[in-house]
Length: 405
Image (cartoon, rainbow, N blue to C red; front, side, top):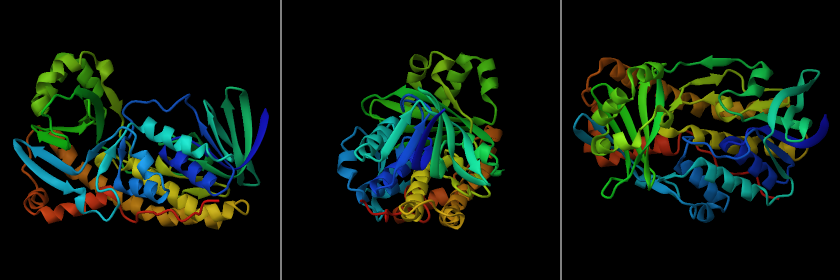
């Protein structure tokens, strides 16, 4: 087995892992990021880059370069309930440098971070390398075992970070306990073509017990169709024709594009929704961040941005200790102390929305009456900044304090 050593090893090259790796390398810390795939190309990953993340890019001096990548912008959030149209979010009032959500393929975002991180000689990205287990000595995690193109590896590290997603291997190996908050729905992702004259803002639709969201992506619509938990097999058993009829009933101006765009169930991707969080995020020598610490519902598209916030906080809190050696357990626990509150607040909002609005709507097969808060947001434009701030910035937004070396 090949032996390596580093100051910090991070399992997972997603938003949390790549941002943390970049920030630590920027501060002069030797860091190794392990990514099990050969590249970052995966469809229907979180592509919403919120104002909080754009603010971080600004603080790093990367925003102008970042926004040169192809992207679209969402300045308002709208919803259609039955035949009525409501505007419920406005990002133009946010106290951030960017007053919009940028929609960008996640692989472009991750490639950008990787390219910037590679400018530092102490950053090491190992693709096609899967973390397998934790190396422990006397109850302290000392690194990981992994398998890469060259065979098995043992990587010793002063800090081991699990940023390997909601099905985290290292989290499972750590013995940390997960609290499941439940999710009564799943999401089907699909694409529809964009035609001249289409709107460009985020569109949510609720009608006859169906919920549908359309995200403008310049040359296509990225669409989310909500279904009861575990309901995809039933939909497939009913046949493609009936599924397309369902979509036509909810897709509004895009209904005429369904038949030509959806010709096979292979074009529909299932997202099994999970909402959970760890009771404890760390053990000596080891910490979980991002989805490995807290899997989020797709409501609000906040998962990628909460993961980025975790990474920034982790770098701020643990970076100074890593510059001197391995952070002790008390220092590791400061990350959870900092990030657990915003996680719980956002998850409480998501669970309330799914249990009180989404699940009853899916079960009723009826168009609900517009809630009072939706009417108020539509009628009083100045109120729209508050949901935009909650979604776009989140509770306790983080700022980069770990200095560059």
